[in-house]
Figure 1 (cartoon, rainbow, N blue to C red):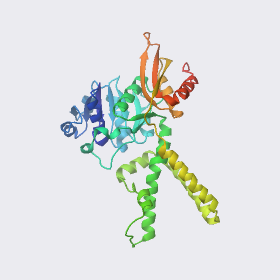
Figure 2: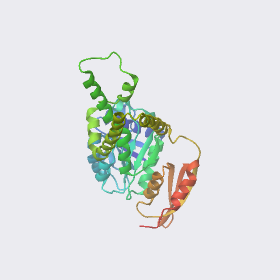
Figure 3: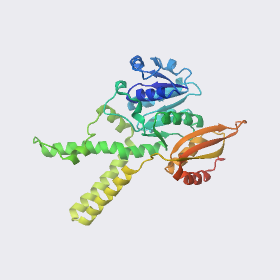
Length: 349
């Protein structure tokens, strides 16, 4: 299988290395520095021309900065062969999904992986090992494209999690983008409070809460902008919660403050302890009609129930009018998955 990586930086280079080492892919890289990535052993072939890099490709990954991701997705879809699945690694999905304009070959993607340093020089094969990798197919995404991208993600060692693009952006606004906003606010407020004075050692709570403050200004400015609506909603909700805390302080409501602290402790344990983990899986097979979007419909339905697909395979019938989808899910969620699938009207157009 030919994989074209568009943008051979930290993410693209690490993905190229993992795919190449698997033996399942011939990896092409296209970027101004692709020749250097080839010398470093991250890719098999280096290109500067996008069209040449995509000729005959089975799968393409757009791994460029967020600010140009949507435009690059359009360019790749325009140049890619008919059967070439296309995905991206952008941390917000609305703009790239809109740029794909319903193209059945596109599957939005976002790996929760990275490093403090950038550039292909820092790429490593294990960057995605056990990382969550969000996939955001739409109702028009073809099952073949989703299968190809899902296979690449598992080959890289990541755990695919399928959900809708809008839900992804709301979630990222809450768990990733808002914390960066608050880290910036905290350091700004501390600097204003201290003025010209300095403190010898900042407390651990301050250091922990502000670790990401000011990170990569150009990158994060583009992330804020690309997810502005969802982030604004989370900021409004945070303001309402701050006002509730301010009200409790003003009224001296110690019981409310204690309960608020206890709830925060419980919420943090739940949010940080949950994970997919390993364990046994069960195969579930379901007959489906051959129509656009049916695989994405099933995957998104399971995603809404927080059921992750460990693997999937498509088996078309000889007449090509129907087929079978085989899904592997965690053993302890197999019953939930079967009930979810039973509730889908697959005959509906």
